[in-house]
Image (cartoon, rainbow, N blue to C red; front, side, top):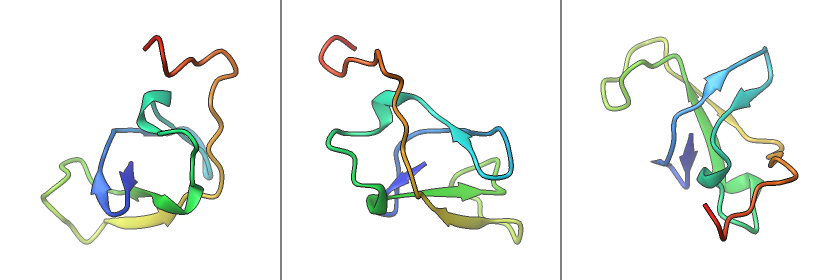
Length: 70
């Protein structure tokens, strides 16, 4: 996961269009356009031809997530 082009957290691709990551990676209020997913890499700074980026269309936080008591 990246915010404004900088690595912030890892994530796992769980389907063709969904990535799961930790809720604490997303600062409220969440601005979807600030985030992108880097796919096809197993090392952040060692780029390969498999690397691709995808814009984040929606961030869904767990309804019981509380960023104050993390």
